[in-house]
Image 1: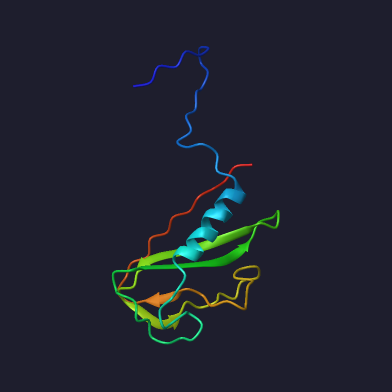
Image 2: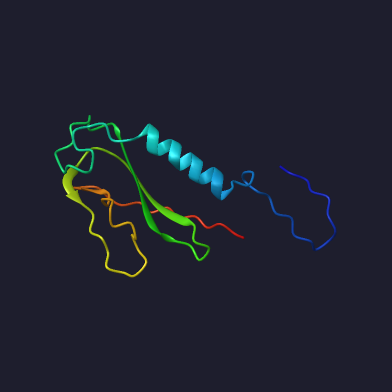
Length: 123
């Protein structure tokens, strides 16, 4: 239980964590890119069948689009390798989405539900 002394009819807000800058976020994602880089036979560029243990972590980071300020907005896929296929997600034909045509989309999975988590950063 928290007790906050404030002026009457004033709203007090609590932050659940300290501010996390864009640069810190990109650095953390760069570190995850290295930690979970694909070292299996698929390498996501060859299209070969993945030989990783099914319970190991599948991680894929891709550029979804750019913000109005020109900053990266990334789409992160995290899963186990259970149900992984040789196919990649389709590249949507919407202007501005997935602008990096040189990289592959995330791999498709069979028999898995999708859980979407989004976040918003206030200026």
